[in-house]
Image 1 (cartoon, rainbow, N blue to C red):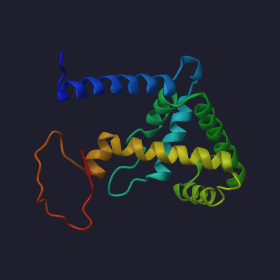
Image 2 (cartoon, rainbow, N blue to C red):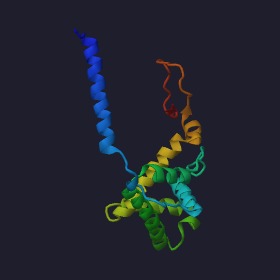
Image 3 (cartoon, rainbow, N blue to C red):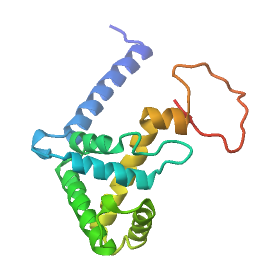
Image 4 (spheres, rainbow, N blue to C red):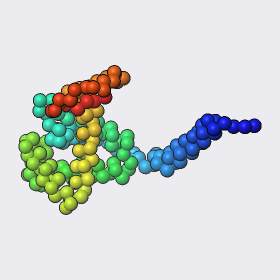
Length: 184
């Protein structure tokens, strides 16, 4: 029985695709024992993360991260997508940030002004080499804040220009410097 080139390529693609997908799942899949059990964040933790997010993306002419409920988003991402080591790094960093802020500023993060919070976070970023645990947490918090904010309804529709997908293609759209980026 003769096989033509097209059938041979289809068979090879199916074989290779199946093998690659299977190997990828085997090599990178998460096993249940990698997840922390009982990882609980209190309402106080979520409020803290909201305020931390607000210091990263503050309210200006558009709503800030707190309006997008960034604390709830961060908790969901940490619980659902981080492995045990990353979850531990996040929670340890959260606690270390609270303690370090209180030590540096002589007040609780939640009671401090936005200017004090921002100044502290900028100083922490500057001394990142010395404070590896805090800097690692800050990097995670920044990443989660940006991701959560710009994928939220508020971020996509008020900070970005939103176009429902699928939309029409317009290859000759006029560019105006200073326009907001598109969210699709």
